[in-house]
Length: 326
Image 1 (cartoon, rainbow, N blue to C red):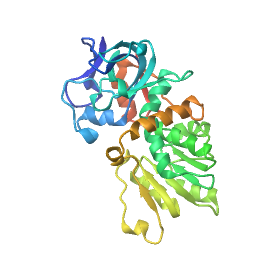
Image 2: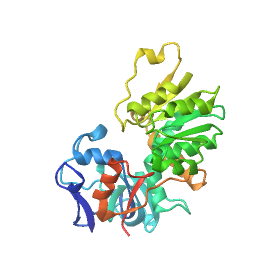
Image 3: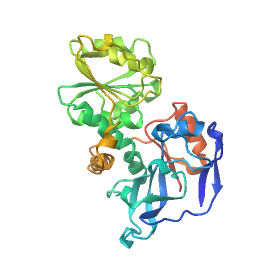
């Protein structure tokens, strides 16, 4: 098979397509003929050697990618033959191996892809969607809320914008100039260009006497700080990323404001076995019911994984970045 291999940590150019032996499923595993593989911002940190998330950096050489969708091509011992030929999506976890034509996954990680859901949409849901569902569970959005979403044109941002609208909330989406129409298309009530220095003032003017009650922040840095400053008394801040740098909080942010701050999932993964699978199931159900449509970047061929990383790091993508093998 062909797979993307990485032999050294460094820039996107360290990702190269190579011919390697087909993987063999072991007991309790299946072999998936991959149709689509998800590209995550964490993948770029691992590739560069700057961070590996909770598990640290992997041994090299390796094949990146932790989210795949495709067809079960072979089953290992202990796996019912009825899985053969079924369309599935899986999060591979620490094992990686998704940037390939074939990938091995544990039976326990599989979800059958609902009818009408494409491989690209499924792979955009399995990881991004489960994170979005955790964010929404912490945010507890109702029709009375005014929700501000920085990076609303990203994979998670697009998911939570739609979910907040479904809950009846007023949604404010932030994006760069070229992505504003995308956010409008997701159903955001108000859309602002966060590259303009006066965007917070424009939000205040548009809201009048209303206040932002919920901020769903995956950006941090200066945009995250400006968003936090817009949050009203007793508001809720849910933080799930810091692509623009850490968001520094101090006692002054909380004194007299009654803010609630949460970081979704976190240690709950350890305390609540099965939580991630439950979140995956809920996200896939939302997509299958057409209540949420995953936003994906124009699919990129597997051989061009280096380009996918470069564009993601350069903020040149919209929605979830997906590699395809066809």
